[in-house]
Image 1: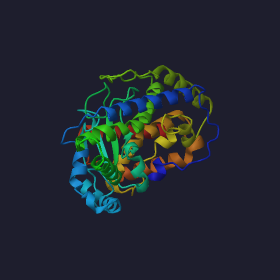
Image 2: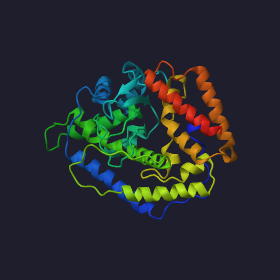
Image 3: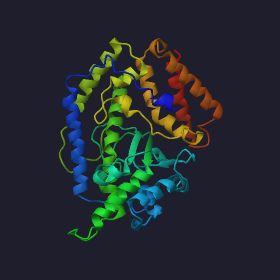
Image 4: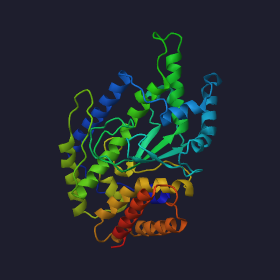
Length: 364
């Protein structure tokens, strides 16, 4: 599974980045920082029954055990809790959720994992922790509305979200320690619901942005219109849409002129937060069991579709081993019926069509 989606890194040869991109990249990063700063400085709250609130409140680990023990207990119980909450993991298939992050009608697969991280570093940088990451979403606008469960754009489709539960709990631990300090000048009025809205959801925007950029270049490839935001932030941001499109038009032109392997293709598409789309497309490091394969696969179908599309009519020329791996893996999944019984029939039909499109591009 990871050999198919976390492609082995290779030397970046022949990577061409548009001259304008460093300016655009810095501008997009500035916009993210502006949004994150606003929601931290202007506390709001999610609903008390929000999934992330349920996770932290269901753990119910006393702070008195100390940080090391708190982390150990959170790590040990994370996957068991994820099964109770019907999240997808290496142990449990889970379910498809409706609009937890991207609003009603959004078909969301929420993956729980316990990936390694420097838990000591969290103490110093807890505000910036990205415990919840976006592996796929359908949005192509760059306005970066908060993934707060509201319908904020005119685009819909599947989304895949990864939650590192122990990391979320460690972030929550230091959030609470910060506001429980005896010399803190204000009363402790920060609720669990405010914690999610102030820190967890805004920090999702870093991975959201790179996925939005990838959706944008895919729409350019297919001559599709971009999505539009339905909600505005209460402050002014600089708009980089046109400059992004200029850069990506140059990228697509370069890819047409120079045949690349799959990794090289993704390395030639610059991202805003990560260096390039090859880095953006990595899935969490977790056991690739049958229970979770369906979710991770759906998260990376767009990347496979894109690289095969850029290979044009001769994908085997530089990608024979990867094409063979795609064919073998898809056949295995079909025989294992990994996409059956885990999602609504209409979504399953869409997934099968997406797979068929990818296979057609792999075998022209």
